[in-house]
Image (cartoon, rainbow, N blue to C red; front, side, top):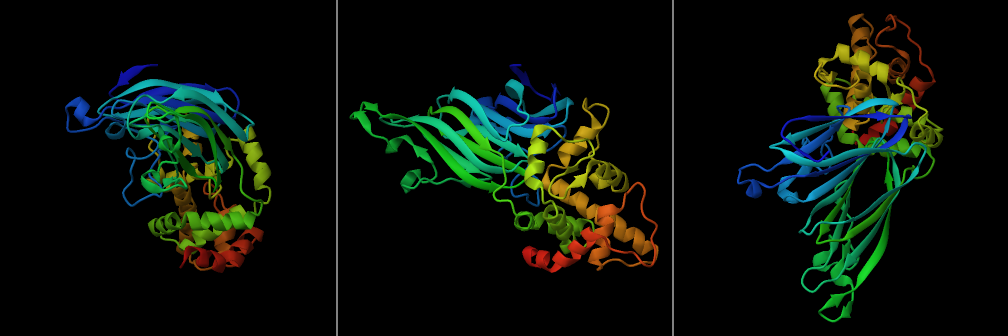
Length: 421
């Protein structure tokens, strides 16, 4: 590709087989000083209109100054590579490259990885000469992570050695030796001398981090100082353990602030929002096997997506009821509308907002008909589970509860404690 862009550029590509796909973006941005301007160049990307934002999500949405973007203030014209790992349906997809004051895009390419849960990503690249700055960022979209391994080479030099910083979801991996290199996991200054003061040791190092990241959006960042060599990265896409209820509890705690925020927006009980998410996850006893099918490509366009397991068609119908949920896709965007819903539902904040909206839909309709179901966790949970927005159940005086709704009622107090309410 290799071109300078000053306005949104749409890169379209075809996926031959549904499944895991890597989308690799290589780009450069300059600082305001290089441009003799008051503003730095920045570049962000959207995949089928899925926006990436700060972690954890804040009150004011950040779209540019986050790990999944290129920022001229830190890059100063050097190259950054961002690798998006996600599961895509067979068909045509769109990466939107959105610059601020321009950017230079060296390339966008895709690699299909269907069926691979242990993904080895070859790199074999030496960092360009430069000071501490983002170098590689990996973005995991609605995928869990058990292990991450980076295979690197660093070298000791007289005045300034190679260093490497590693961050996972914004948390720095600290080295065990501390000191001024505490936040640089690999530091060339810790290596020995081959010829004292003239030639330092060069060492290839493989570092592995055991993580317990569930579905959602996650960032793995590698920052370079000087010219380390990145040989390859390996991702073990799996869940830690196989207990569905334990996993459900961790999800509730991880997204506590999003659950409370979404409940407030749609005027529903936050514990109910958390309880239906908990029940969706806790009742998914085959979640480990489901992950293999998901990565392998056995997914459908009306599948359940994200932390709240929201169906794509349900999202479509809710968009028609709640304007704030509508992504606003217009004729100028060259992608497919259904893919937009699938991708947006992978982002936890968006997904949880749909959960809250679905609860509000049932609660409001039944209340307007004279049947108050607010506070009846088993009934509201049942309606969340079975009621279709496009073909809703006629409100009546004696609604029953199915197993899903009974599970919501059973776990209500547990979820209340997890949310700290």
